[in-house]
Image 1 (cartoon, protein in one colour):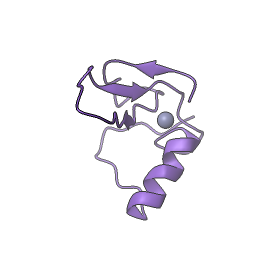
Image 2 (tube, helix red, strand yellow):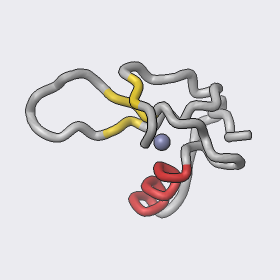
Image 3 (cartoon, rainbow, N blue to C red):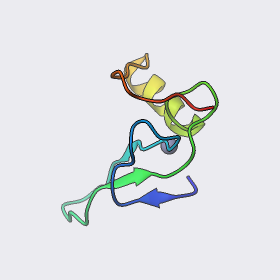
Image 4 (tube, rainbow, N blue to C red):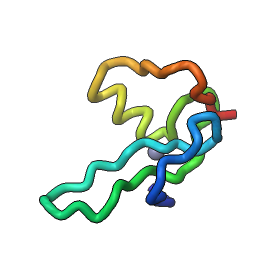
Amino acid sequence: MAKILTHEPDRGSQTCGCQIQVGGWHNDGQKFCGDLKAPGLYFCREHNQEVLDTYGEIRMAPGNAIGR
Ligand SMILES: [Zn+2]
């Protein structure tokens, strides 16, 4: 993970935007992945795999851009 954002990027952008889970009780603000989406995927490769591992499939709402 190269970049961390403190706000959710535009879903139509080329930014992964996967929300990063922050452990513990302290809420220091939301964090989102700032890496570029992998070509043909809705997330960067790391998070594409993470979502597949967690949910078994990738389901995205309309309006989400796919990596170029
Ligand atoms: Zn990511």
